[in-house]
Image (cartoon, rainbow, N blue to C red; front, top):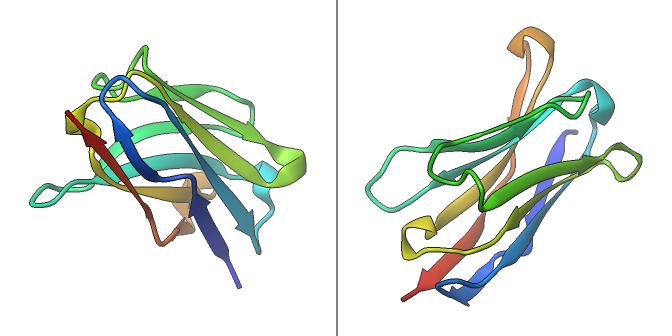
Length: 117
């Protein structure tokens, strides 16, 4: 019923840019906090950025000034603009949707981002 579908991943050189998209269905999108997480090989999944239904955003220290999260409620889509990419940004990036009080949490299948030196 609920689907989060990521797209936009790929291979890029250090210093380059990518924009990830996550299209959501099966939820009242405007009522959910949306987020991006990532998981590199051998590491735990970590928060990248979140954005509330009001547009208030938060991001990890490691990506501040480089990544920007945004959302388009009319399109049920959340984006992650990634600039000045570094090799340490290499990971599978997952889209996340969280309801009020975290009663429901949903995850996408992930999209691979690889940054070469």
